[in-house]
Image (cartoon, rainbow, N blue to C red; front, top):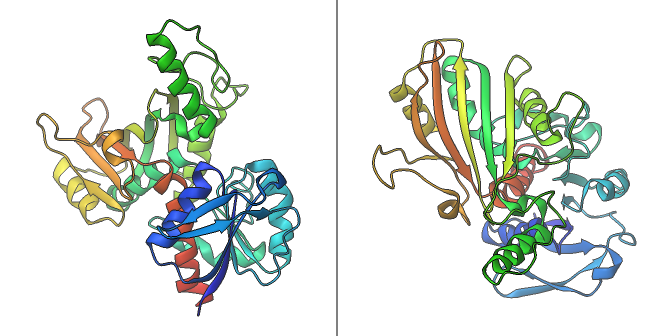
Length: 338
């Protein structure tokens, strides 16, 4: 059976990646409909190597008869269209922050908590977690199963593509401007991003954390269990694609480096590249365009009992957004719709 699939936000970075991944993975779709705002009507987008589709208007689209919508249009747009689509019988898998913490809506990473999909029919909406949370919990899950995680301290090194195409343009233009002595112009970022790092992603909250840091803690608890404590520092770096994370973990039970490495190697979606030598680790530029979460620099943390540290990288547009959304749809079909 083939499905009718809508891709909402089809002209954005993540929407275009969704279309590409649907084609790459031979997703069982008879019809794929790209949707965006009225200003994008008629824009051509690629679906795989050979097929060109024309974008239709989200506001006028009737979701009746559409089985699944993969959505990444921005939270305010999702708030308006997703309930309408769900009411029409379409299952919305949403990549924005709009529904993640709603207790009636599953927040899913298929390698970590696929069982949460059983509750999708309450609202006909499934939430995709934040990009920085996804890659971290994929790496944490096998270790949590092995020794029980008490606490995580994570520092992120997040690429500008996490803020969209305009942010990528800003990094490019600022970098070029530095070499020709043009004045630095800021739009998406609060400070110069070229040749700099900015410890500020999303808005500040009353306790001094940014909302991105709060998301990592709150989403990890919803996905993996409320007993896990997470303290995050989220930093934007001058990289176009690919997030890095330095993750330090305190466990309930004894664990050693070799057993952790074995568990990670056996885990779905994880590739371990951990050689204690030059180039024996993975960096963001090497993970761009790849599906996996890469784990390197696994080592003991001697400052706490039962502690390990590791380096985690992944393509934030693929596993951190589009790929995870498509994988949710694949699991939904296999377990509930097929």
